[in-house]
Length: 200
Length: 350
Figure 1 (cartoon, rainbow over the protein chains, first blue to last red):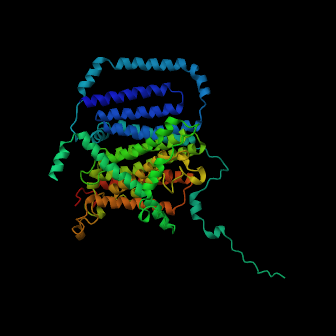
Figure 2 (tube, rainbow over the protein chains, first blue to last red):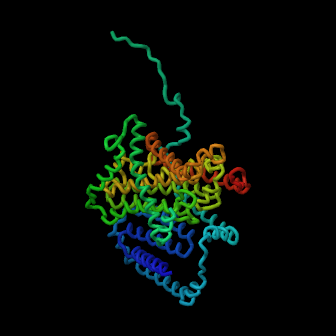
Figure 3 (cartoon, each protein chain N blue to C red):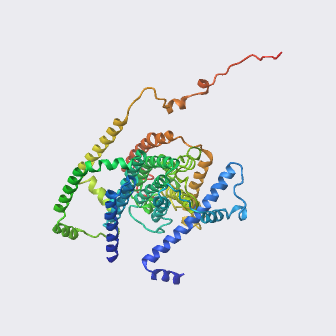
């Protein structure tokens, strides 16, 4: 039990520290990397709470894919730090507003009574308990419709994103692999017979 | 023997786990070292050369000499580079490459952590490997390194999807995320292994694995003819060697996974035939090693055979060819599983 406490406090400390750094750090690449660290530590905390499926999927989706693309974009943009600072004061009021609202919401939700309720409701499962199978069963029986609807909405969003970026520009020289495969020697090479010339 | 077992049981669990990790990582590192020698030898013979043959008998000590040389060399940190990230990057690439081995079973029960979501864990950790490349590319503060990192990021994310779908096919067929259960689900004979019903997924998984490890013909992240050496152009000494350790450890990992998921892991290929008793002296994990070695040989074979893919062709192959095929084959597998198609999905085995 004491070991679990050590793990919990160690990783929640790292989580708090790294999420603070996401906001505080100047360089956007560092901020993104700290966000990766906080996702990863959050995943570890979830795993210690016997939600291994959610923890692993958090790493797989957010750390392994989403943040890689984020970093990709940040590195491509080549952000100029001095220019970023200009907007700092302009966005300050709205940023403060959002921060205060979120803090108030958290304070309302996370009262001591509710936290102690959560602590009591946490059950510890036997070693062979399969969190992934349980979650799958719940999602595909009790929550079938919400799950399917969410999936369809995501699919629509994916297609919409692709359609938005598709711009057909005339005159591009991109290749059609189908046509390349179908090409035969006689289309490209012309055999010409030339009479032998004699040097005199 | 019983004395040894009693000593083993007296040890605390943490020490037991640590010893298991050492027993896994040491042979793995040795395997990596000799895979580099095998690569140079195999490619040498394929190109009608002899390969390294000076150090030790027929060059057998070459990897040791290489390792010593790399250890002695200075790690140069370029002035404009970001020194913290520059040092962290190789660590970020070796860490997931080693950690993923925790759930790989070598035999019934011969595994460090027999967790339920084993396959997901492997997929999640292998997807972390790209951070080493990205951080290295960015921290070097060089345009070649950055280009290599960007190429690698785009490539790995694209092929991860196809790879993930191929794994979903395996999960569907086995009905489990646990690697031991997946191997057990293939017992019967060589025909019961999943390579046959999942043939397109098998091929796609392996090709995506080659792309994930940035190996030829998908090694545009290095692409020495275009961007010098890509993301590790500024690295030297051991920092450089660690990237290679990670790359080769990942190659072995991908090969071992392919053997476990599609070629029946440690199951004997002669299971259910008269030859089974003839080969019963072979310990099960030897079969796994043999199958893994076959895939590793394919890695080397590809490198000696195929020219490097062009960037747009890689993207086209990943998105427009592999993903549609895997989605279609997932439907086929799901249909077969629901209808309990013999001989793979009727739940009988042998």
